[in-house]
Amino acid sequence: MIKTKKQMFTIIGSFLLVMLLTTVTYAFFNYTRTGSNNIIKTGRIYFSSTQNGTLNLTNLFPVASNEVGDSNEIEVRVYGDTTYTGGEEFEISLVSVNNSITSESTKKAIPINYIASYERTPVATGEAPNNIGTSSNDYFTDRGSSTAVYQLSASGAVSEGEQVLIGYIPKDVAVDGTLTIKAYLDRSNIAISDTYPAIDRVYIVNSNMTQSEINACKSLITGLYGPESSAEGANQTVEGDETYADFCAGTGTIFGHTLQDFVNSERFSDEEFVYLEENNIIIFQGYSNGTTDEWVRGRTVITTDEWNTLQNTPISFKIKAVANEGTWVEES
Image (tube, rainbow, N blue to C red):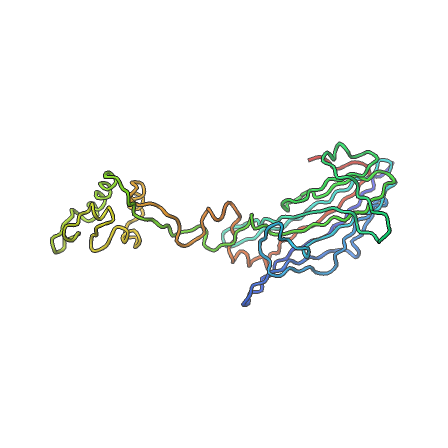
């Protein structure tokens, strides 16, 4: 009975955001690894991680993909050959993703993105270039031949089971390549705001009301303050020759204040505001204080308090490499 030779190793990429709240705020990614050498072989195929110690990033905030630096990258070297008649296949994926933060009332997942590249491992001057095989757009059809092939996911979201690299190595064909993975917070997916959703809605009086809209306004004011009167005393609502129509048009006053003054000082109830807006007497202009839906554009919104919890609940994930005799990776 022939046993399938299968081995795996795990590199732990723990991206820890630590907030140091002084006069300047700093954030750090922290990378750690486990195992004595992080080298394991199956047949004659080796996987190794070249990272040692800690990788740090200062002043970390969500960035664009073209702004990701080299200091937050993880490298996995794939090298060797195999004597298996059916060749050997390997898979490198992302697992054990921990990207949730919990505040007093909500639990959110922080989007993490990655950028990956797979290139020949550098060789000394005068040596023959190392082979990593051929990149294939139809990998599951091309694998199993006498040629080494691979399929790389060059970018994507860090999610459980995300397949970054798969490759097939034929018998007696040597490969030596380095997979580089960079992780970052994509600013197109994350918005940091303490004022979302916006609360303060700004309205202005419609300066082009129709007669029917003015009449609707007059009806509301009459119901609130009684018939218009310029007589001095408790019943005086307008002054001189002014009318409720003037007030509604924005050119007159009642009790010495314009309709815009009433709107700005919130002298109308919520129901009355709805009436004014539905009858086109006032027009919504936007928000005076707050983060709008237009600015958020569907991104995950994080408050500063939620951001600061990352110092206690670090974002982390693992990189897992598995190699096995023959072709065994299932097409998703």
